[in-house]
Length: 263
Image 1 (cartoon, one colour):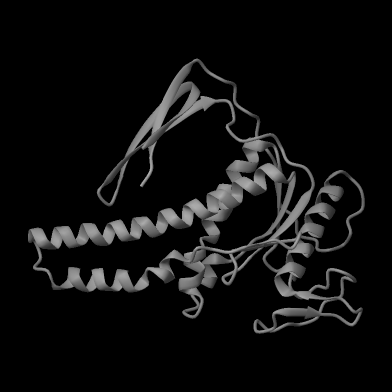
Image 2 (cartoon, one colour):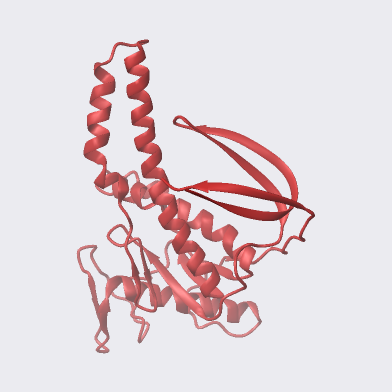
C-alpha cells in the first residue's frame, strides 16, 4: 500500500542513483519548508555509543544498533559470497543479497537519526552539541564499530540542514570542552575515567554522566548566544562556533507527488 506526498515548487534538478539493486531519483526543488516553525527553548545533546543521545531535560534516545544486531547475518552472507565462483551467476546473486543487507542497516540508522534530528529542530530554538572527533574515535579498535553504527557524522549533517529550514540555531562546543568533567551545578572540573557513569561533585551534585554533559552543553549554547549579543559570557569556555539559519526559499508553481511504498 502506498501513499502520495506532494510538494509545490520549481524542480531544479534530478539525480538518479542506485543502492544495491534499488534505483532512486532525488529531486532538488525550490519550495516552501516542509518542517514546522522554529521551536522554543534550548537543549543540550550528548551523543554516545550506549545511548545514541542524552538530552539535558533527562530524555534518553536509544540507538537501533542495527549493525550489531545483524552482524551474524552479514558474516553468513559474506562467507556465502566468498565460496561462490568468480564471474558466476550465483556469485552475483550472493553479492546482491549482501548489498541489500548493508543497505537495510544504513536505512535503519538514517531513519532513527531523521526522527531525532527532526524532533530537535522543530522543538527547540537553540541546540548545543559537541564537536566530536569521529575520525579519531574510529581509529580505536574498541570503539570503531560502535561509533560507526551510531552515525555521529550523519546526525550532525542532518541537524545542520534541518535547523536552517526551521530557523533554529546550533552551537557546537569545541572538542576539548570538558562537558563530562565539569559539574553542571557549581562549574568545578574533576577528572573522570570512561568507566565512571555517575558524576559526583563536592558540592553535593550527583547525576548521570551523560545528563550532566548534556546540561553543560546547553549552558554553553546559551552563554554563547549571550556573548554574540554583546554581553558577558558565563565563562564556560572560550571556543565558540555557531551555525545560523539560512533564508527560507520561496514557493514555486509546480507540483510533484511521490509514492511511498510500505515494506
